Length: 117
Image (cartoon, rainbow, N blue to C red; front, side, top):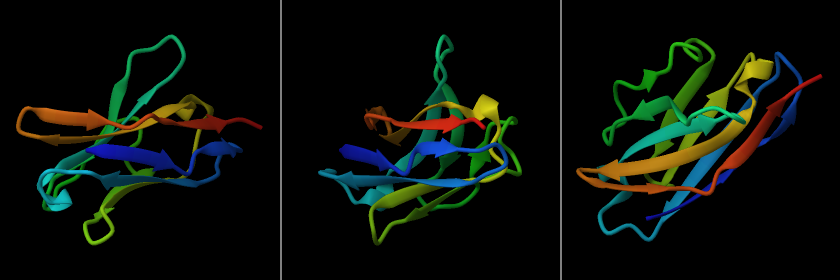
């Protein structure tokens, strides 16, 4: 599966961004894959931000983003989104999209999000 993230950029604290992750070249239908967003800040380990099941239900979030970020998917467009509101400087990181199905997983190349005044 090929994953391409977009939507990153520079935003002021308190602002919003919406990340997109477009999928292609999958062996099964896009709706078969669970989708996740991770992020990695400089000098830190990559961490899970949000995950949504193949069916689109019961999304999971890191405690640090609960109530501010929303993950969603549009299976007709083969795309998963991450709506980020009330952004904080500590949200600054490279954000990666990941798909998974059983033992298979694939990662995107990442998109930079910088929260700064």
